[in-house]
Length: 422
Image (cartoon, rainbow, N blue to C red; front, side, top):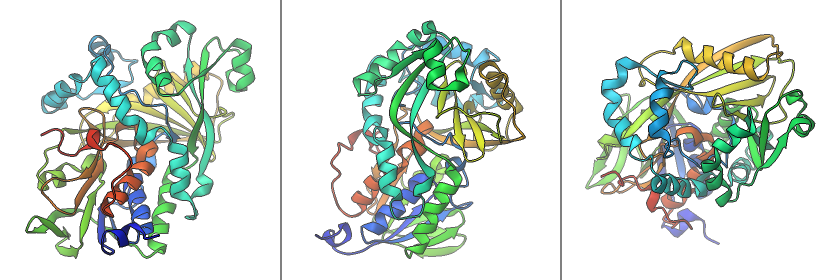
């Protein structure tokens, strides 16, 4: 059987801009299809969100933030000190047009359309990552697990029925645990009055940064080239990609893939697309050598944050701040994570803690762009995965590699078209 490169007339030199999970996945699948790969990143593999995410393969996270009730919830979320959403008020004039566009998707029809589009990208994430990592040396970091949504009460669980109806309609059926049953499932919740809705067939990455770096190391070991630096421009002749400008140097290539996450805007514009792309500034705290660990990843609904067991530490992630790419970390999100943790596990102790802030790339409709750039032969994009970049990165890379090889994915790619906003 011919590989993808042979089917499309020969191997290509493919430059991939961005070495997070999407870019590294694209590189591996492109190499498997017979292409030569140049992997480029401004800071190096897994230097951004692919390092600091929740480490969760959240296949059931198909419901976007823009549910219909967001219109009534949003003002309180921004103003309440215990809300998981923060807004830098000095950034409001700049983000206001994007926010209005984002809020326009808070309808039932658009919410269900987004969930339907996200499902093929993330719905089988564990298997997608296992296929990606096979033979790379990164396999040990993938841990099959259940995923628990923890609620302080049954009433709080029932208040989320809208989202659960969408999830169950796509095949995610939770098992409910309360009281003694909850403690029996996971002793860390002994004495808690809440409810755990547990969904099977998920996964976690025990060290996201190490995992993505191991995948990038495999790209290099398989003959790929890794370059560190910021790409300044995409070079074209006759409407076809011929190379990239990197630090004053020209890198020749037959095709390029933009997978630079929240930093993709300028190059996307260079390719003729003004994407409605913003960053959700995400925060995490890691607690090293904690006195106890949850059985698996737990979404604490009251604080909208995830507790994920990792190697030697517990990671708390999920706070969102709207404030752009330039400002440094704020202290309030870290303090809120600590307060929410104290409410859920007041007796937890640990030796030390570390803090991190990074940038999630979010498009106004909460659906990533995956595909060829119209009017520029050899240019592709894979970005805008918001909260599910790690989850959907493996599948996205495989789809991009198929398109690079001239193959038609067995999936309707229309919802992910890069030009759908124009």
